[in-house]
Length: 76
Image 1 (cartoon, rainbow, N blue to C red):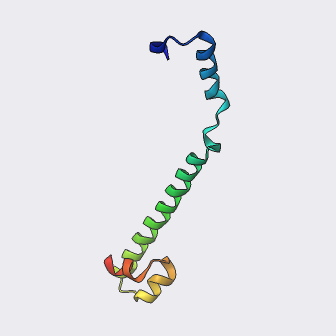
Image 2: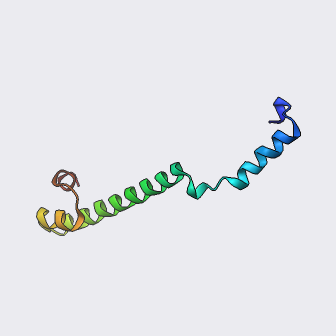
Image 3: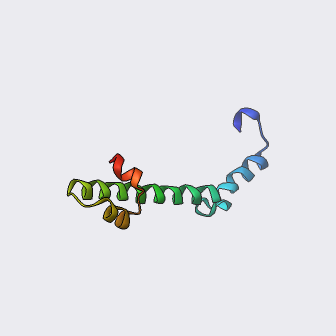
């Protein structure tokens, strides 16, 4: 802003935007938060599936408890 010599009122308005804008209500912020949760849950399911597979649990039981696909379990 300073490099473009904006008027003081414009600079003031830009500063107010930070006070008006609530990041937690922004749709992109929310989507990122949800995607992060989904990725975290999937990672936990993969870890659990891997542990179950190591312990010799049948694939049908791993699918039932983790909700992973058979292909994902076989790839573990």
